Image (cartoon, rainbow, N blue to C red; front, side, top):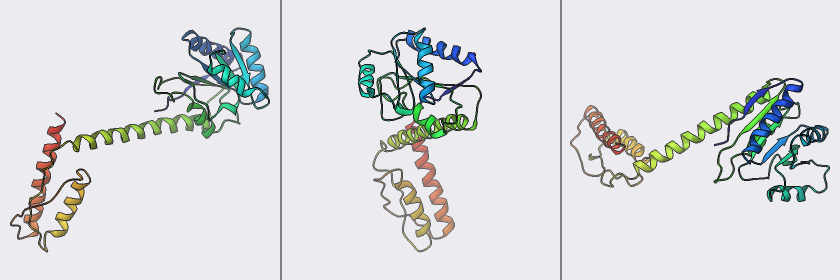
Length: 239
């Protein structure tokens, strides 16, 4: 799952202090950092400000002709942090990377762009977790939607993983679980539905044998009893 971004509100000079606070924290933990800024001018000014307090950084944007060399140097740990624009929004993966989006409420940052930036974090198996910090003057619709979308995607992923685990547990059941019935005009359609439902859980499920069901009522009772026994077995499988 993607790390859910943390929104930090700070106006005027406060947001610069917040930027220094989080950058200091990450560098102290020896974690590489991307600091995203909305424009090239902001990238230049933000890097100048940070370079007064933190060594080992570099700026990178679309007007830098040596972008590939800067990226290679960062990968080789020559730099501890990069102040960048959307040029590193996608297509770049680093181990144990942390991300700060500075002035995240700027109009250039759509929900999609913020989500793409957040996706830079936690992409390596060795370090699947990380932090994404949104620093802004105020909250806005794009920030809220980005955070909600990531949270929803994580929940959906957890549900998929949970269903996969359950399906794998069901497939460890013995292969001799069967419903015994006799096909006739009254019970055929009801029983077929049960068989189809059970086959979605066990691909090797096979209905065989017979039961003397003369009426629809008897058929329904029989189905209920069979399903009860089957799901009772499944519950025991989790114990």
